[in-house]
Image (cartoon, rainbow, N blue to C red; front, side):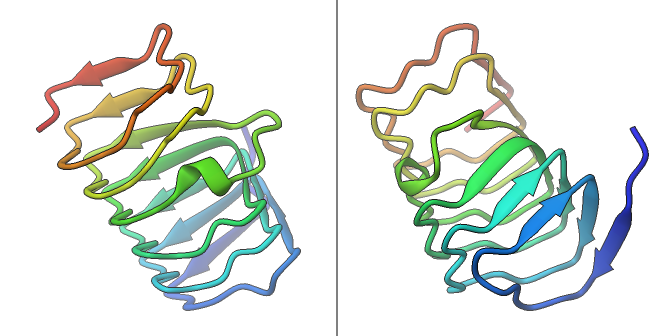
Length: 130
């Protein structure tokens, strides 16, 4: 899959922006309002999303690698085509309440006090998670 653009060390994005086939390295979106931002077929490496607002945010086939995702309310995301994978991420205090997280992969993630109430975890993989 060819990537169109790589973003390094950015700290914000405009609301209602669309990113397709992008790589984000060492970016901080902590406390950001990501209202209606679309991330499609993107990768995030060493990024911080802690306590970001995810109202209608779309994550379509997204990989989070070595990211800090503390306190995120994924249930506020746009559920259409929602698909993500997590590798070596901190997801403490996150919530996936009532989402369809079918075939989601959590590999070597920290998942302390994460809410999976009523979440569809069919075929989801939890590999070496805390």
